[in-house]
Length: 424
Ligand code: HEM
Image (cartoon, rainbow, N blue to C red; front, side, top):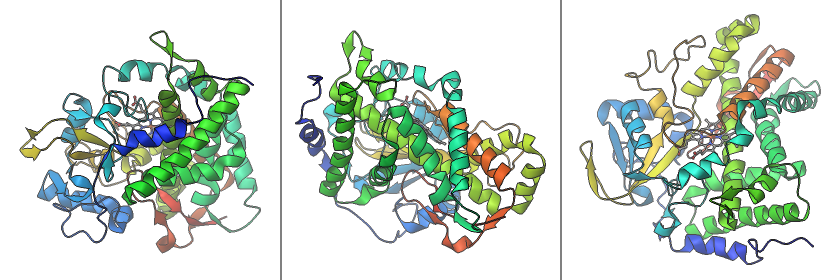
């Protein structure tokens, strides 16, 4: 049996231990008293319409506050969000998912899911080793299989006149693509969805429950690692097992942390972007008609959907006590870094709250800003483009079957999780 001393059977306990030193705060749930002083991104109002909340806050205070999650700030202006994203000295990425506990200080500079959780100087080499499999030319090789899979999903609608565009279409595309890239069995896709929900939507669970959920993900990843050690193949998992940083193979935390990142970042984000784009077209007949009659609008339209419905909000932790733009920040305060809010700042974009499908200048921040800018953006754009092309080719006429039944995810990655759609 092939072995690799980096991956012992006790590894899973060590993963839990790495989180046990964390500061924990009591779970605070329930209605928000005032969004400027008590915001929460896990309450239903936020999931239903965070744009309205953020637009209201922008006129009242440029940086909102909450005591929930052990204390957090929410900047609303593009310039503030960009400044924080670029300032890795004063704001750390030790974890980018805001919740009730923070990983121990010694998790830095790698963090638990490198490179997104890594600060300089560790970040640069950790990111660099991931670049080759995500270049535009490597990603284009995946296009034919992605297209064929989209057709397969629509074939399975089997002539019905109502389908769920999120459950039956959007979610499957990124799960299949990143699962294949990592070399995970396609039949495990249902488990991936649970991992993603636990990581991003279950953040207000009691810490013990959250640690147990993370433990399940790592158990799965370690099993995949062992399978790849015994049967190496041409995929991202074997690639990571063989990668070297400064002449050394990556340690077990690095390998599995990056696998976790790719799985989570690869699924929820693109699933949300595909779903939100189809939802917009279903509820906006004039945009649907324009795109169906003039497919050359698709590139500007997809960038506009990414801007207007940017799915990803990230987090940072304040490194030391400081005064920042008139606000008294304390070490270990969270910053909720809302790229969606940046994308709708009227000082940055004309008609910021409108969806303008032929918008020409569109330097949006959906993929982030600064050193952590999305490494999977070519993959995300390919999946989004192919998913929309195939849907529009096969189903040029569609509308929301029940607008009130659309359900949006909670937390930092926002997208529709169910979209009953009338087709044909
Ligand atoms: C529409 C889909 C996507 C959106 C909107 C998106 C958005 C983002 C954002 C905003 C960041 C910056 C994080 C930060 O500043 O802390 C990021 C980073 C990252 N994304 Fe994506 N992402 C998408 C799809 C993907 C996909 C498909 C993958 C690949 C599996 C991926 C992999 C990554 C990685 C590895 C990073 C960390 C880069 C670094 O820290 O240097 N993303 N993404």
